[in-house]
Image (tube, rainbow, N blue to C red):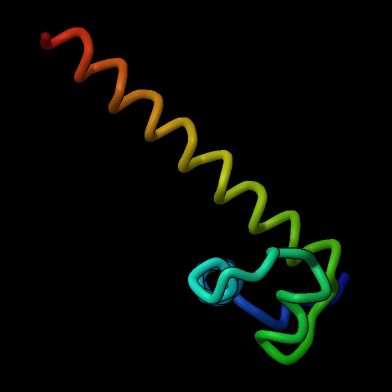
Length: 68
């Protein structure tokens, strides 16, 4: 298996840029934004990041509600 051309952080930053521009984050949009890569891997990295953020946000909400 070939090593990944782009680091996860590069993919996540590209996804954030797309969102800030009001664009949908898809594998092909990520590929165009960073200049290459496998769209399937790119979108998988982005989705894993999004899911991890949802978990963090829900934990913060839970602890905030518990403190009230």
